[in-house]
Image (cartoon, rainbow, N blue to C red):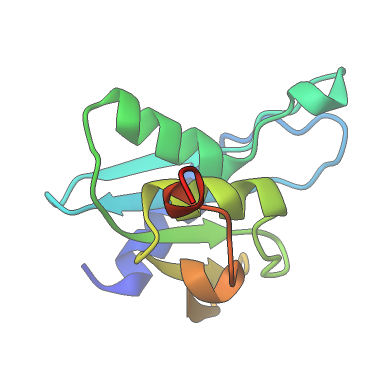
Length: 129
């Protein structure tokens, strides 16, 4: 799948974001190895720590649907904002080799990898070291 197609899914998901506090909608779309695309959007909460980011919504929904191998994730914000630290950690856990397309609301994007976003991240190899 072309990056632009995955970004289009994330752009659409962004329209469903629940952001009454920040007004900063984010959409994400993850591409599973089997070709499925699973989307997510950020969902805010008055108890701010209960808010969940679009990237984690998409990835946990994908896992709930049985996906385990991920090829890429597209993240769309108003201004091309990068995933937060918590999302980077979850991306490392579930898709350390994933490509990451970070796009703005016009669809302009840059490409990176999970490992570039979280160098020397904590993963399962460190649990029994």
